[in-house]
Length: 346
Image: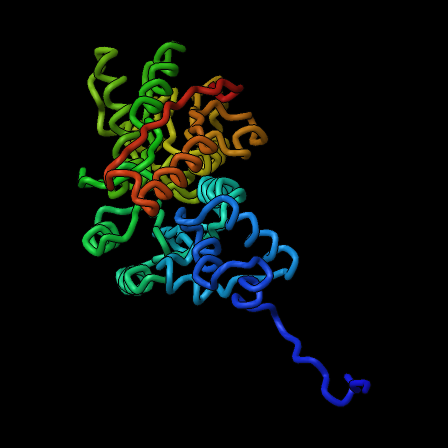
């Protein structure tokens, strides 16, 4: 007797856990342990299951796996800035690129979130507390931001990109902002400049505070009295740097050097100096901070302080991964050295 397969076509569909178990000659529970990377499987059984998975092209059910492991294999990178600044500031772009590159060889997926105000911070906090991500990297934090406390209290694995503003006990990776700013200012003083000004970042951000502190320390160490007229505050944007430089020239028209706390602001400062008829570096020497791509192509090319962003992003991912896997205390920290890159502006 022959069977007409066209009358009763075989049931087709994606391979199941049970089919993998039959082919491998093991129990369904053993297959589940292999899929969920449990160590409680013999090498022989693991090899048989992996061979069956490859032969059947079995793809684990991600939702079911998450129920077992309580992992989503997703981390969130949260930036507390407006979308316009997130996508225009080269520092943010470098961090996003670096974190993505650090995750490339892992099973983790990156989710980028922006928190522009308290309402959005609360929404992101709910999202993280509800288990949609395994951990969070927070960057560009301001003093009033709510997320560090909320996520820490909820036990969500958390690493800050930047030292916390209030010194709370939390994991972070930061550049030596104060040391870098001090070296930049000392360089300007060493060039024989008599009136070295500073264009700071926002003073509700630790990078703004630390870079101002570096200028202040270098100034006082040189035996100079810090002059309030030599200080103007910016917002880490190009437009903010241009406006702040114009204020500095009004406050201290005799200044002959300026340390600017970010490269985008330094580009704006160069524009303001050019508009005022000041030559760089002949009349005013300029040093920035970040060593962004724009520092190499602006006119003149910008002397600046380089941050090791590749090292920092690798450290961010490593510290967060150690927390997610339960291999680290929650308050591990790293501070990465900076270096001065000399170009034509100083």
